[in-house]
Length: 183
Image 1 (cartoon, rainbow, N blue to C red):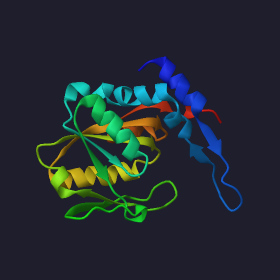
Image 2: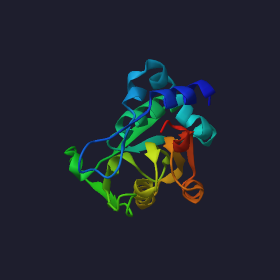
Image 3: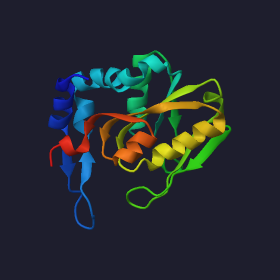
Image 4: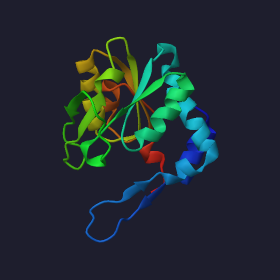
């Protein structure tokens, strides 16, 4: 991956204090979407480590994954499958395969669902997301793939903020380490 992209990702990133009553800062990655160069380079950069494995589909969770997933899928010339969350008000009709994540960094368990007709035993899946800290949602996505008989090739994320054993277990590649983002 070009160092220019890594530098741009860092330059466009901000931490935001959401105000009273909150216990943590919130990452603001909106600058990534506003910058046309970053937007054009994200998909190809995310998929580069997996191109030789020939994914047949990209799977990504709502909400940010609904932007990154299609960018990655387009770069590969394959289709995209969205993983939906019941709280986002966008649950599709029809049969769904569900999985619940283990607790994330805030202790939450997240329910995720994928349309059955879009994921099957012939699929070689690349999972894509913006940030990984515990891998909790990724584990739920891997469970959905296993339930559908699909093979997960690994996960491509923009920012890696997880322990090395999690990254190795989930075969995570990233474009920037969270430690390299401005404080």
